[in-house]
Image 1 (cartoon, rainbow, N blue to C red):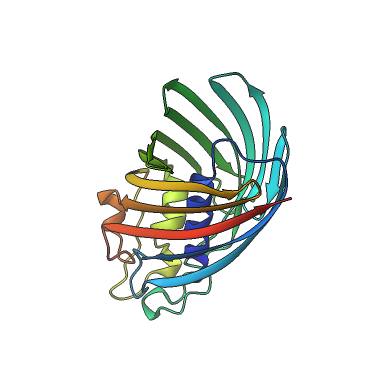
Image 2: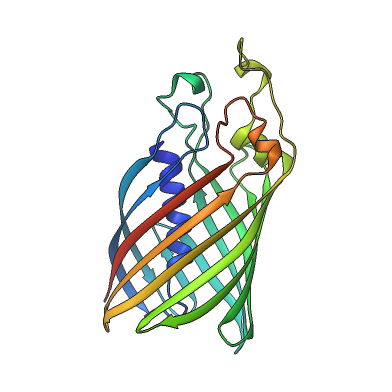
Length: 244
């Protein structure tokens, strides 16, 4: 469970980052709680440190690396490298015995467009470059930001498309992994919608606290998998970041 939950924390942390972040080195910590869709996996709590360096042109740290290649008043285009972690890496669940997935690395492009006051459209596409599954992923998200008193909030909704290769790596069962009661399974390409909310509040010019909650609704093809027992998952967390 820990590997998958770290992946969820990375995604949540990226979503919760402020729109205008301060340049320089940053350190912090993020603690969260998340549920797993996999058979035999339970809800877990994980504490993860964060460390990185951010400038006007790049951001590199524990969440991966991002380079800003084009930017205007309303739009931005980035390239990124991002690790992907899996619950199926040395899982303790008997139901997942014999199924093991390696940590992989994705390369991709991300485009953001502010087309109304406080409204942002994000589109990112990624391809796995470590030759484990060579799958692709596309994430389309719409975010609306507003203030609740002194607290800036963002609510968002989106959908995650995954290619057949990636969906099979995440939720499938190969012929070699098949057992009695766990047949071989290939979900094909999948699309899973999600909704969430985040907040990022400056405590001082160099200290920021943030939080996020996200619900994912799994594609019916995923829930048909013999190693998946849930049709939705919920993840939430809070963190603090110090900039230097």
